[in-house]
Length: 78
Image (cartoon, rainbow, N blue to C red; front, top):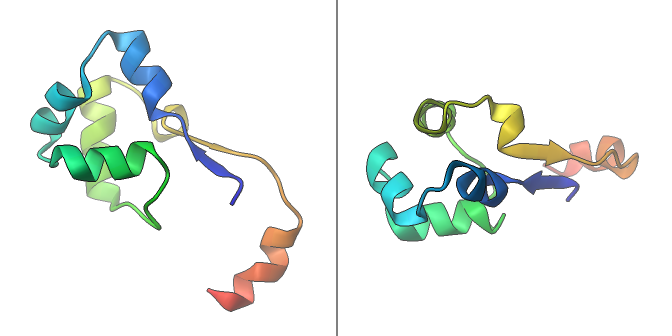
């Protein structure tokens, strides 16, 4: 999937520890780790908003997308 989670870079840039961020937004360290690794299939907008508030950023700072024409074909499978 061409959507990449770029949260790790932001955590480093802000000088935070993932454990501290997880506690601030109300996620378990495991949940945050799964999101950071891109192993989740989705994220609630509320959780995304909490991450953005805690990191003083926008959703585009947490996620990136590399265009893949196959994504348009695969839409029927979801």
